[in-house]
Image (cartoon, rainbow, N blue to C red; front, side, top):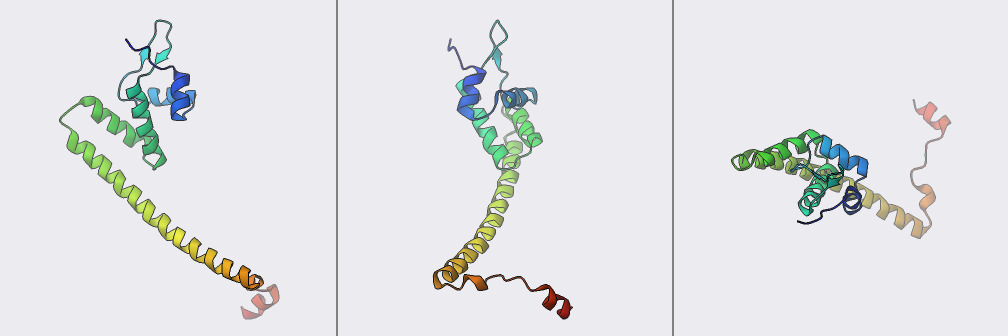
Amino acid sequence: MDAGLSIGQVAERTGLSVHALRFYEREGLLADAVRRESNGRRVYTEDDVEWLDMCIKFRSSGMPLDTIRKYTELVRQGPGNEHERLALLRGHQEYVAAQIQELNECLNVITYKVTIYEEHVAEGTADSLWVAPSTTKASEAS
């Protein structure tokens, strides 16, 4: 039988802390129960590492823990619920796509501003950018 991986090795490979790995296990976010040695130490498999890598991507993309837990429960149940899994994944896919679109719009504004500043800095006219109105002029205008 394969000796498996220690919690420290899995932490190193996934970038999760030992504390986070224990949390994931406690919260039911692992597809399979983590095997224990006779001394109680956790022994992880390559499948566990792959599952954790996927969960990390889900979390990094903003998937709530409850959704990851639901997906995990569906996988544990085995065949027959693929439509539910697909719906869950599609919903998150749409969420991530909307995030990307919003971030691209933000990036476009930032890129535009960088271009303006680069031009003004190169021309020596940067001191005219976004000059705050003086207190006197602002109070006279109101």
